[in-house]
Length: 380
Image (cartoon, rainbow, N blue to C red):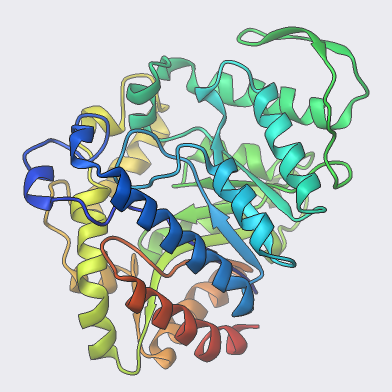
């Protein structure tokens, strides 16, 4: 397996009493609850944790993009990636991912990633996402065009990376007289592209297409759903006439390892419950604005959301562990849970979130050390 260390960079000093006076920690919660000095301390802590991951033997360090939220303080993940490139030498740097439909000039993403790939001498992994529904409230982009803009932006970026310029690009959403990328990516033909998702059937089919074969990462899902979605990708690949390899299959999950199951449950409790109840929760009208999803994908998402509960403060550490949405326990228990999914799917990429919610630096670093020394070697 390949192992990524990932954090959302949540704003941990958040006043939860004040937060719960608002519908969500996204978009509508006043930014007066953010203290820039405390935020600076948070960035320093998180970047240090991610840099430590290389020392501990992780193959990949992963960051991502969210806007106007305490859930994740990375509206510009390229800046965090650049900082990590300067503090690491070998680990891949994965931006999981950039929300393509949210920008009016995708060439800027092509340029950013080409710079990061060159600065890192070919260590970049490019994650392309549509962005969840709340991002469209934050940016004012019409969610009905999300899918179209995503596909068109992807095509423009890949062409910018691979075609000799200058050339013209004419689409329904993006039109450019001159596309002529300087600098070009370090990797040939371009950095690997990964596709994180929560199980959209359209996304699975598109990522598995023979001309792409992009690794597909299931995020924040119960274990049975992880297995189901990875099997959907494998079945789709077979329909296209090939067998998907384990390197095309990924799983992202909060993981916590301690000496015993009881200790792991106790130490992961505050982080896991705050992640799902306080930071991640969004009402339906914010999460799924009209036009954002097809009918079939909407049905799948509703099933998943129903399994996780539909109101704040309904997710206990016990329910999250029971569903496999959070993997916590002794090294033996964590290995068993991961191996269950690997045995049934062949998944070969594990994106481990080892700091989540309000979890302290002390617990996060202890977790990273336990996972890297007691779990990773057995899975390799």
